[in-house]
Length: 538
Image (cartoon, rainbow, N blue to C red):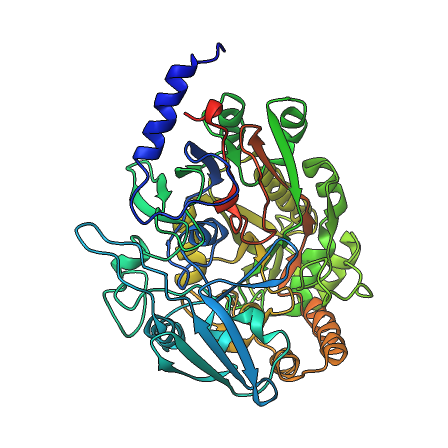
């Protein structure tokens, strides 16, 4: 491309300077502003607020729109965000946060931007903990006794008890008290969950008819205006098409590259393939409301029946690790002494026989006139080749031990409603991604059974409940590790999931994106510092 004459360059620079809004704080790094980043997601977000959201697509967007009192930097160290500093008193039972006084909420159309104050922090905590607010966060913040304000920019949290790593917990995203329509509790019918306003580097512009989420730079962001002008989240129902969209420059980034596309993208000099180690794993989950699946022997038979290593090698190019239990691999809480159940179809049939099942004339296991014939609900579309192969392999493995599996591929929202709201399923396929690798309470504690809660399979075990509570109460890190090792062992034996594997995640993006740093869980935590050179903006 020919360079522009110097006189034109001067005009362009002057024009860019002329359109910077009054009050916008420019960053000191001298990187250029402007350009758009179109990124692909496998599915679309259900909600866009940080309280009701419980899927990663939504949570990644909330990272661009909202802030917490504290944040986590690239070295995984705690840094100030909405709180400029803090003090700890009473041996860890009292935290005083001194808030920034230069933060404003994103303005709604036709309204002035309103200041962020201590009232918003108190409002967020109260609405998050309200019994009628359905959120996976509630169980994580039960350790807080009260929150009060000293003045508009000082807020004090009193804890029921000191806890390990308490300060990191205050990274929860703060929402405005003038945001939700209902000021007492938040549900998915509130307009705020689809049209949120935050304090973050980007504000929601609109959601298109194709469900693209368009975010634009917050000119008044308290850390300085982000460099990239616009983020566009494009949903795809087919991972193959998403990979093609990147190759043909229809999008600039894929947050999570399909493993089948890795060699092609790695071999193209236009792109960067960046690994990031999310704390995550995939699994098949059982609905224990079905009496056939309430028997631990039946659930364990399913785990013995499948050859997980063969599936990992065949469908994901061996780029992952087989797991045995509920903690994310790589977590300090993971119990390496608990081994994944081996592939042993004979043991699987033996367990089903013990549970009272016998093959009928069609070769299907049956008990009391009820066949072991089950539905398996899978999110998104069956065009996803890797997911489809995993599901079909699972079906074939189970068929060999006399279990009939009928896969049902569903659109993302329909799947979520069936699993989390109506509990209308026998088995499901999904993945969890963790920000706190040692907190599995929302997944397996019996208090978390209910509509839109994460214990969707109604798993209930008094020993597990007790260990979860005990782990939260201790301040001794080594004691907590010992408790979690026992928790891992107990849940692995109960087999509420057939635990599969953790995969190595890759983001693929066009080389025009610069200074890209990826948070392993939240992904876009550092996106306000990314930039696109002027010559490559479009």
